[in-house]
Length: 65
Image 1 (cartoon, one colour):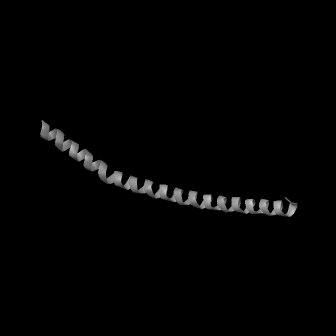
Image 2: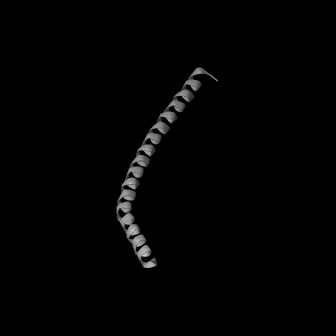
């Protein structure tokens, strides 16, 4: 294998690695955004559901006695 072919292969591998690193950064950024949105949604649902659960529990206990 001559040096020019080897140099081309090395350059190709370096370009592929750079591309994959960029794609990885984009993917991680998207995942972080999705996690943040899901946390907000979960927090909002908790604010709605927890009082309902507590109210149901109180009604159950009052009905039971």
